[in-house]
Length: 371
Ligand code: 13P
Ligand code: SF4
Image (cartoon, rainbow, N blue to C red; front, side):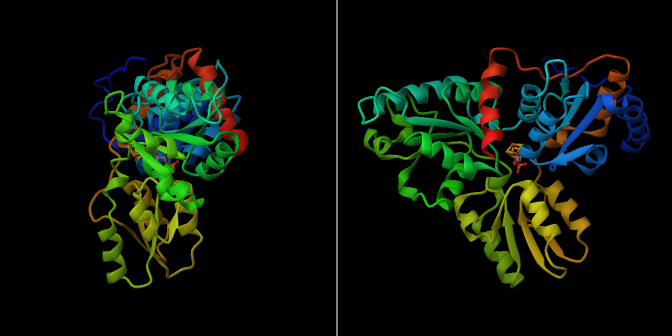
């Protein structure tokens, strides 16, 4: 879908001017509208969400709502695509700003994954399990719909940061090995936690030319149990071991809690690791007087801090650690799409075409069934 540009009347409007109009539009649209908000959204936007959550919770919420005509997704593109795939054909999913993408999701495209798949399959073709697929593709939900379709077609599943362990466990009961994309860190951190040694994992660099096995030797590919795609989150890679050490030195007894998109070293040093929903719940439920340094996006960290004045809560990285694409959704775009809906005009719809949608749905449905 082509991005429509915010018209002049909305551009330059102050946040405060938008609030009463957003409220009024929501009220008039009533149950025809559902607004979903990811935890990384700014407060100015999340205050209008009917439901907030992590990427798993929001995909479940989208799938569960069979009634709303319009689902306005305040998040990023892959989340809106997943919602479109999981909702009825008649339900319209809108991303207020279509430029709200995810740089990690962009680190794997279909051509690259198909090339890697062919090369990897050729290595195992003569192995014990030849004649059937021996590798299970698993994609993090942070990926384009056509990659979810690829995974669905090959019998695999989607995972999120909150269900990666059960999905990987299931996958290894079905096949001998995994190809996990696009986030190497979520794959590695989850597999290590499940007891799979690091020396059974390799990293596949999609930028290496065919024949170079993603930067590995053929023997290393033959031995690998988990093949991790060389992708990462630009926000979470900013959290470093020295930040953990510095907090521990300055605040003895502090709890370090991080998202599993952080590096292996940081995750190993942390006291708690979990999805955005799990980080939120863990700190909200912690006893008063406890201290927390949090390795995830700053809007969520700030919101947790304000909701817990009886605790010390800080970002693990000094300064702003912002997901710039999540931040593209602002009250002006939200107001614009809502006021258009009131006039039965749909702007910035996210629609996944067939047959991609059906194939991707297989991979998403497997995730929902396993989780
Ligand atoms: P959650 O699944 O924890 O919401 O994370 C989504 C995401 O994009 C984290 O960077
Ligand atoms: Fe993508 Fe990272 Fe932003 Fe999450 S925080 S949406 S993984 S860029």
